[in-house]
Length: 337
Image (cartoon, rainbow, N blue to C red; front, side, top):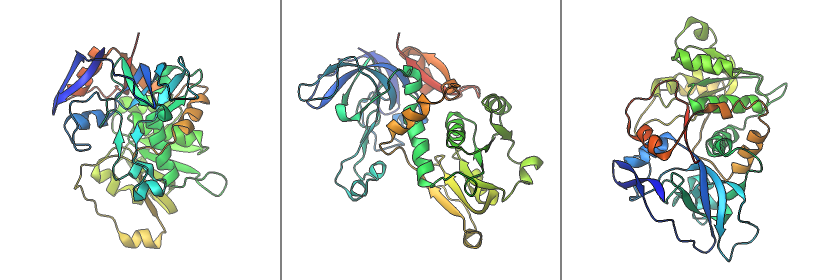
């Protein structure tokens, strides 16, 4: 079968590899759509996890069940499914607290185990989630959306007359926009996205979101006015400024990924005096079904519009290896014929 393959550190290629043999407890999935995440690039260079080679990357994917192991029940050939990629050990302290995303022995499809950038993928049957009639390209957004929802859950986001009235998200890339649209889907009425790239702000506006430019006078006068502020840039100076935009009693979510060792300066007195909550978030936590439910109710198809490129594997690999990507690029997906 054709696959994107990492044979060794820093090498990405499209090649032919064997279709995986079906193991007990597993199903063979014919991949119909798989999204590219920056993590796939980090994995290639062993900057996420310890580096596991050879490897088929790809952890955001959906497809059709082609075969099921004899010991698997409740799953039929032909089922349309999305994949929950995380493989926690189930026994460590984090797993015992049901924080499976923080498992001390965490593995994942596309990171430590072969993933979705291939014609077929062998997946534990318990990690398959029914997608109903959702288009495969939309269902492949369930994994990044589940990561966003895990962040909102960690922040204990609440809505209503006396809860989160407005929000500010820094970063109008695909994750920032997915975060902003999720806030709208959860009932936050006023959501503003800040970015320095004009084309991305225009796209955000077309999704019904308000926009702002970091460093502008218009945004500067809105300090201490947002109940919820999130970073989706991974830029240290942006994270350092989050608290300044949070209203008294509000929440700041650090969602963007900074390089390990990065440090920022934040006033502890301000956190104390204004009762600010600062929250971190990592990956997803068995909430693919929650993400699929939101995607199923996205009647205007706003989240699906985040897929800007639908490509064969031979073209996806260039997005893994190229240094510069156009600002108009949102979510890149491998889509099978």
